[in-house]
Length: 230
View (cartoon, rainbow, N blue to C red):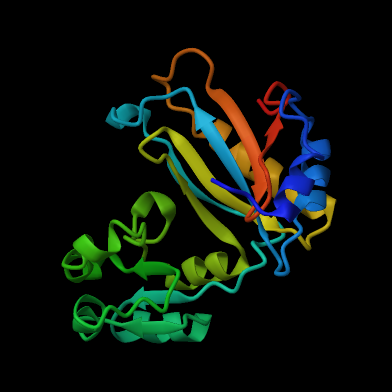
């Protein structure tokens, strides 16, 4: 893959042989975010688990103290009072069966997170094929299948993110925007790492945090010293 001039210049600032302390890594990621837009800072966390085993799955959700810097659009599947509650809480879209053809047939995906009340999961289940691959399926572990739709919507709007292992046992999560201060990014990063360390499966053996890399959307990866993370 051929990188542009800006990337090449930015990459020169990063010593690939060095594992940086979290604060230094964050400062470096901010420095190497040189795109014309406000880049997202992401963490890529490789874990010493095997996600193919149900007892070694790592997934959950955490509210970032400074949010993600992104406006998150929330779709809530609910009826009656719960639908009214979701609207009052600031959900962007609220509906029930009526949304199925819109999503399934019209390819409507103007939302980032889906919340559903438990009684609506039968309906939402029919969308499994389209929502699942996009990581949009509501899940009780992530707090997106709940009767407390007010809390779910408020948390998501406040900067709640979901984390889960991909097929290669890596978790990819947003830490914030490049325009955030180093302190804000550090707070968010520590919150994410704290949650993932706490979520360590009892059956996980050996080194849990294999590697942690921080990078902005268009910038080079910066390796983080995992020794002090947990």
